[in-house]
Length: 62
Image (cartoon, rainbow, N blue to C red):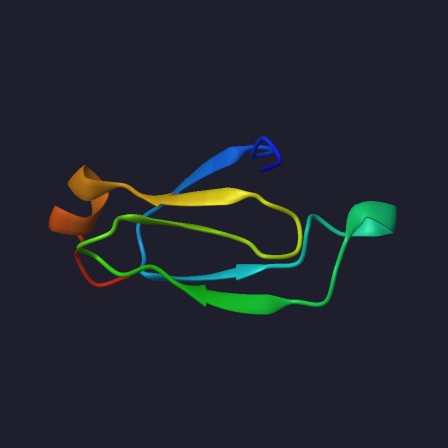
């Protein structure tokens, strides 16, 4: 399995990934992080999105 390119902390369970645009980009996909799992890897570019537990708890009206 390929090494994850980068790990991105997010404070929402839905993230949009397009690979960062440019030549390395891919079609935009929306990924849903299951809170009990806490992270998800993009099937296109292997970026790992990690749900920031502290940010999720302190989520106030964004």
